[in-house]
Image 1: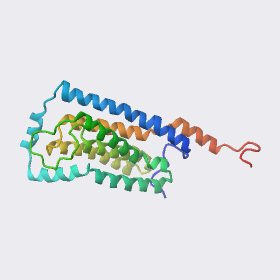
Image 2: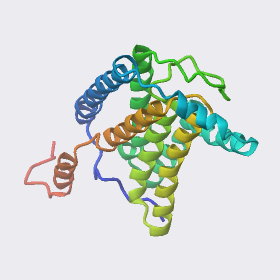
Image 3: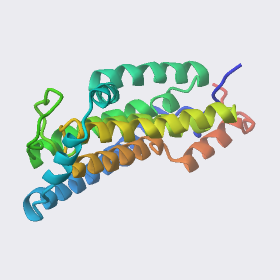
Image 4: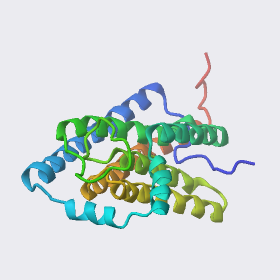
Length: 242
């Protein structure tokens, strides 16, 4: 018996419909999101010149060996390779359970959009990382927005949205609560470990949330319902015959 019910789109989109949806409902919103991220980045870094050193130093002051270990594990959950592996596994399980590739691809779409927006926006903004002791190796990307936070939010929030299709109420709620806690923990861990300013993490949460919602709504529900009605309607006389 399937644990996950079919997704919100009852029948597979045609190639033209999928292409149109990707262009107008994924790439276009992603472009708007990119402009917003870059604009906010310039506002924070160049215009307002937000100084968050006191917050970063406060996190350094409360570091303990135990919390260093805990945050290292949680931060690693936002690592690109870890998220890609987790995402591929969940996509495979969802595809197997629902037999709907267009539903199963939602988390992969969310991660792909987030990576595209983050990688290009961070290059343009070019914010330096906090001037405190950093507990992790700094990746080549700049500090704004937080990539770990954005990617984990996109992936896990898309998991939470897809989990609305889980039949068992207890399992559904447990999965959703866990999927909300993870990106929050990743973001706080990145600030604790000196890898990001608080505004970097806040931007990461916002970007990841937007990417998850873009992926979740990549196919229009109304059009899918119309397709389902057409598929279930009896053929009229002579329709479908060679």
